[in-house]
Length: 174
Image 1: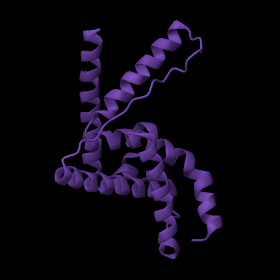
Image 2: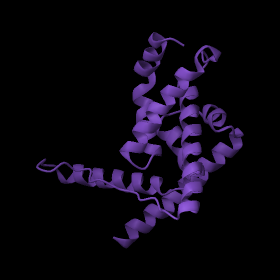
Image 3: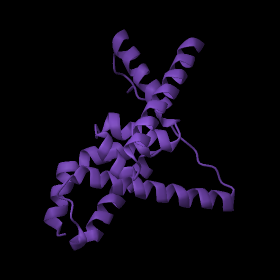
Image 4: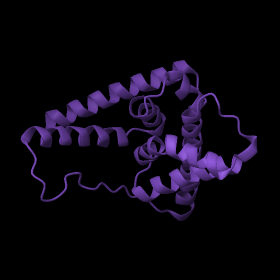
């Protein structure tokens, strides 16, 4: 793969991949690293690459695999060193900006849903993000995660049930 081909992939799929990385990762730095590592891995694969069929799906699978590897390494490190991962959540509403009540409610609902999705276990969170955020088909997700289509469908269904329950509980608490 030459630099021109890499740039064409970045131009065509970079925005989608970056937003996926931001959703999967817990902070901006981790998302940036995952994004860069994905394209670096693509570049390293070079001439051995045959991704004519679905390049976006291929990039997502690289990203998911890199994320899983990093998480596995971190959990091993955490067990050895006894450290804990911190999750930071920044405020979404910029200061000084006037918003209508409907806009505030809509932002709050989006924040609640994102928060609930972020708390799902990876086996549910990643298929949900790929399906709803990246709008990939069940078969594409199946090939990315190397799972049967039925398993992907059931994980998305189970995640929706979990999210519904969490969001209903939050609404009831308020």
